[in-house]
Amino acid sequence: MVMMQYAQFIVYIIVIAIITNLFRFKMNETVDKLMLVMSTFALIIFDGILFDSIHTEWLAFLFICVSIISFFIYGAIVSVSIASFVLSIQTDVTSPVIMLEYILFALGSIVLYQYFLKIKGERDRWLSYLIDNSKQLSVLKGVSTSIQKALQLEKLIKTILTTVTAGYGLGFNRAMILLVDDEEEKHLKGIMGTGPMNADEGYATWESIVKNKFKLKELIEISETEVPRDTLLNQHVKELCISLEEKNFLSQALDNGNPLHIKEHNISDQTLQDFVKRFNMTEFAVIPLIQQGDKVGVLIIDNPVNKNPITVNDIDSTIPIANQAAIAIQNARLYSKVQDMALKDGLTGLYNQRAFQTLSSNIFSNENTLSVIILDIDNFKHFNDTNGHILGNEVLSKLSNVIQGTIDSHHIACRYGGEEFVILLPKMGKNQAVELAEEIRSNVVATKFPCEENQPTGHLTISLGVASTECTTVINPDQLLDYADKALYKAKATGKNKVILFEGD
Image (cartoon, rainbow, N blue to C red; front, side):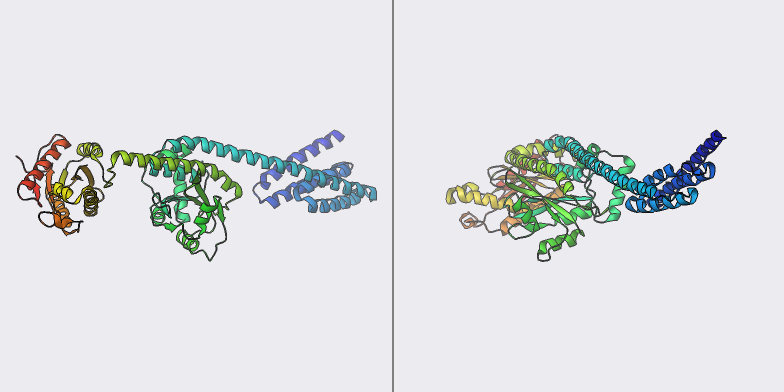
C-alpha cells in the first residue's frame, strides 16, 4: 500500500514537472518563477492527500528554498508564512520551534544564495572580460596585417572603418575619420565615413551582411574593392573642414591625446552643435589618432541604429586599433610623398617624364581614342638670358597653374622637360583636343607673367602641337607623342603662338 502511494506520488511529480515546463517557458520571467514555486507548493498538497502530511515539514524546506531562489527576500517572507500556515492546518503542529527553524533556514538560504550570486557575478565579469579581450585580440590579429600592408590611404581608411563597424569587429553602427591637413596642420578635414545616416539604412545593411554571412576578413576585402556605399554620409563627411586653432571638442581631444566621450552637448561649442545636428548624434566618442606625438586625425564612433550606450570598455577596445591606424596612416602618407617625389616634378607639381611613360602606356592600351597636346614657351631661351633662371622657374610654375586650371580633372598634365609640357587626353577626339589647346593658348596670352614685356612680342606666348588616334594610326604612345611634336615644330616654324593638329606627313 505504501509503495503504491509513493509510486503515485512520483507520478504526480512527473505530471507536475511536465505541465510546469510545458507552459512556464512561454511566459515572462515573473510568471515563470511563480509557476515553479506553485508546482513546488503542489507537492506539499499532494503529500497531505497521499501520506497525511508526514513529509510536509521537510517539503516545506524545499518550498522555501525555491521561493528564495525565485523571489529572494520577498519569497522568503511569503514562503515561511505559507509553510507555517499549511503545516498548522495539515498537522495541527503550531510549535514556535518549527517556525523558528523555517526562519533560520530562510535566513541561511538568503546568505548562501547571496554568496553564490556574488561568486557567479565575479565569474561572469571575468568571463566577460576574457571574452572581450579575446575578441579584441582576434580583431587585432585579423586586421593588423591588412592595415600594415595597405599603402594607399583610401584603401587603408576603408579597412579601418570596416573593422570598427563590422559585427565581427568592434560592432559600432557608424564611424568616421577626419585627418589633420598634411600641409599646414591647421585644419581637420573629413576623409571618409562608414555607416547609415538613419536607422532604416542601418537595418538594410545588417540584413545584407546576415544574409551573406560575411566574416570580418571578407568584409575588409569587399570594402577594399567596392565604391563606398554610404554616399550621403560620405558627402557630409567630406564637406567637413574644422579649424584646430579654435577651441572645440575635436581640438580638445587632439591636444589632450585622450578619448572624448560625449553624452551631453556643450552649447558654447558651436562646432559640436553643428556636428551633432549634421549627423543627428546623441552620444558618441572621439578617439584621437596620434603617432609619436604627431596629430594625425580623429576617429569618431556612435550607435545611431541600435542606440546602444558607449561604455568605457567600448572605448578601451577601440584604442589599440586607433593606435595601429595612426601609424599606418602616417606610413601611407609618407609612401605617397615618396611616390610623388618619384613621379612628380618638384617645381610645378605636375607628373614628370617617367610618370608620363607609365601613364601613357596604361591609357593607350585601355582607351579606344587618345589625344595628346605638347606645348612649349616661345622664345624661352631669350627670357632666361634676359631675366634669369629664377624668374624663368617662376614662369614655368605659373604656366603649370594655367594648364591645370584649364584642363579637366581626368586629363593628365606632365612637365616633359625644360619648358615642354605634355597633356594626355583619354577619350577625347581631335576636334575637342584642338579646342582645348586653343583655350590653353588664349589663357596664357591673357595671363600676366613677370617681365613678359621683355619678350620679342611683348607678351609671353606658347606654341602647341596636337595629335590624336582618331586621325592617325599609331602603334604606341611614343609614336603619338612624336606626331604631336612634329605639329609643335610646324607651329614654331610658321609664326609661333598657335595650335597645329598633326594630320599626316
